[in-house]
Image (cartoon, rainbow, N blue to C red; front, side, top):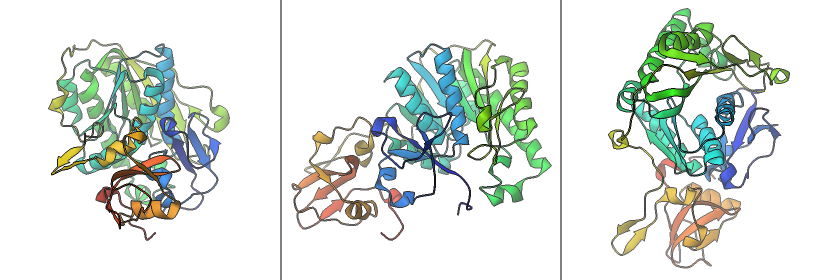
Length: 382
């Protein structure tokens, strides 16, 4: 349960019509919205359609740094970007939207989560967001560094940390904190950066972030990376002081109670050390957990559509008969109930809410077989 008084924010999906709860814009995110109250996201079909992602406004700041660096680079295309510690998917979906606005189809975003269970959640959220340029993998940073030398133009490392910025939101984080945990996290962060460093090309950008206030995990670690691994620290952002964003030696600090979100620290550097060349990368070495929606599957006489294809930003609603649902029926579909569509043609139909695809049903006449994935069904009684 989120404590009362904790700010709530979302980030709209610009490639699904900017449809979602209304709010006040987050200063550092063009599609971030601060909400006056917390709606029931579970019972909002637009949430399940991937029209928006629920993300703390402070956690959107690394996405701002990415957009700043894209502008500094001259908004290039054919970029290869790694979101290293990506679960549950907030920063991945932010990066995907920003990269698509700048690069169109000409980018690759690898979204990685080493913990397999968390990687499954990441894959689900990537599927719902619906950008086929995202590939979700689950690999140790050392394997990425070894197999893909010099491959990435930008790496975002939102590393595991001691979590001081989550104290208000998560009482468990307060209970688990200790000076020893800070030391452990700082050492782990150094190891993660060292392991993945070979995968960043010379001249590439590392965006480094945590949700803690500890210098040992923030400024000190970015300075260590610059001095030890070979980089030049980029200037912190100066333009958000009016919104509570502080400038530190190597980055920016967002402290809960001073900004309209939770705690976050973020900084960036340019790699100045030499990197190997990955001329012919074999991404099949990293088994993808998600990479766009699979094609329809032949089952007997049927060609069964994959549920994820309806959620793609490129889905053609005219490729199947379309049945628009009211709120009650949409929630029953998302609950995986058998719904009735008396006016829809027999066979496979895409079901929509306010024009946004939710998934597929097979209309049998008196009832419909519901193709909504069991792992995404609403558990709440609708």
